[in-house]
Length: 500
Image 1 (cartoon, one colour):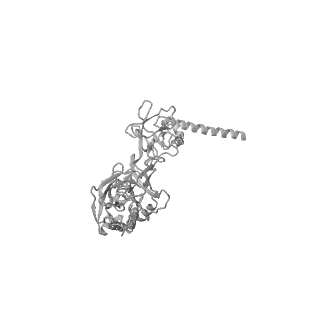
Image 2: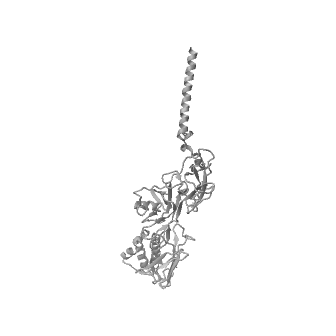
Image 3: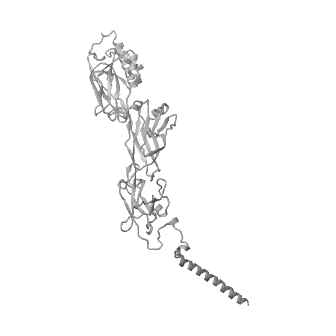
């Protein structure tokens, strides 16, 4: 804005100087009513139209921004009703430093005085106005702006200005300083995660301020206590390379559970040269506890925002919260009459095929076999909600919807194993206190009971098929031996007769 205005001031000076040269010796000093010089008795106005950066100035200059406050100060000692005043304004504009606006003006020997009605704040239409302004040069400084925005730099504006057609003066001035409105979003990738300990990744995407100089830029992610941080990767969406250490730093504070990505001066220069891109941070974590995990990211788009709380004027902006949900299910083991049974053992599988084949059992807390307790009850905790994936609700048949399968690997003594796996889901309802699934066994119809499966089964031992009492069992053994010896004697006798 200041560079454009500098060029404009120079054009004004040249135009007035040329007009003065033509008139010298031809007419007396121009009166206040002369159309070629500003009217010293005239007053003007200044209307500030606050818009988002990136829009053209013609017609609708971009989305309006309400709640932006400006201070307007008169640069005293410059009289724009004279040629010398325009020359002084042009000279000041060449030394004007937006980073130190008051200082650069005062260093040039001028004093700043607040204009009547200053400060002003933009309304819902993004406009703020000052009226009855005497002719002069004014410094406009943005002093308060919404969270998540980078303000426009201070700038000089004159009242009046030459009409766009070059003939006459314009006393009611409109200016269009722009703010860079910078947003941040966060998403979660947990559709492939099933049980606690599986990877859950979070992607943060932050806008780059649409300003020529970026004096500060960082992204903060305060992780939920149910998450364990593993690593983070930083890239730019347009593929422009950035390097850890030289362009940005990644720091994780294990005490506050906070990840901070801060761009260095070199990295900010890269961002300023690629303002149309975005910064992406992928944070890799694992979920360590049951519950609803909510996370937000915070973008600090400029140095001024670093020391202000999120959401406060001029401070950083936060992403909408994104969730991942983890819960449990409680199983009750009973007989056909509803009586609790003990001794059953279960495993959980991610698919029916896995349950049928006994492969890929889900491990929780280092174990994949879960026995019921003394009351025949079992709570399986640490499974992702079936109906919630990648931060949104999902329905059966859609990507991310997860069905689980319960397989009985050992039945209670005297009862049959289940004939097939049991399908179940994990939701907010199942994660509440109470029994969610009743599993019934029937008594065995054979003896001994068929209460084992797979590697748990053992072939019967010969002794197990004989009576267990001592006397009869011993008599049978002795009798068998006598029959065996008698058989050998008869065979030997017959062989001897054949030889004789």
